[in-house]
Length: 202
Image (cartoon, rainbow, N blue to C red; front, side, top):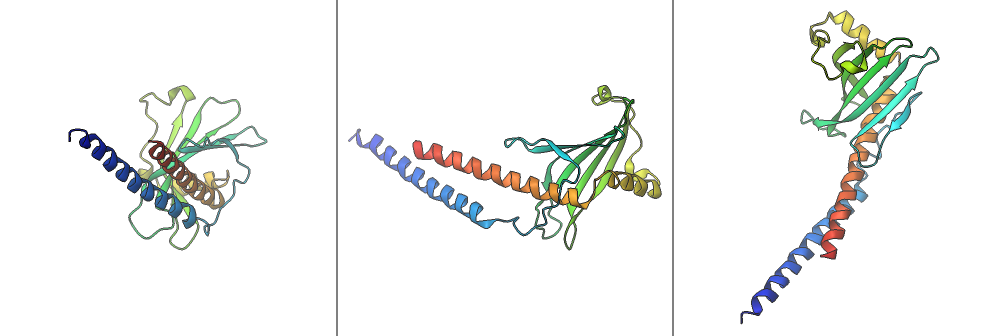
């Protein structure tokens, strides 16, 4: 009778694995067939080029260089979920925009949030604006400027228009919202498939 116990344990484990495999397979099938973001506007990169977009990373980095030598770098990743209303995109995008001018070491940095509009499309808000003397100042606790919300409203509008003039517009924010959500979904499916493979082998 003592030998029956290991056999029972193996049987229970096999049943649990089988149950888990069915659930994993169901979830993978659901994710692959749902195409949650297929009807959304894709947007475009415009004159930006993708500098970094590794399949396993959460972020994407874009860059644009003007004939004048001015450069704009954009890094973006998904932020927290938004529970305010029904939305095609469950999460907002956290976007950092850095601008440099030729012959200067200083950097203008804008921390932005991209959200879906109520009807369609997207928009961005500037949360903070910084003037950095050089890239070596990124980690130092130096004074970077006042709270963006405390600035004169006209200055806030002008700074947003400054970014829009450099290509940070709706086409780009539409692209980032869709691309990053699709990227996360692909990573989730890939994770499920690896988990399914591991359980199946055990």
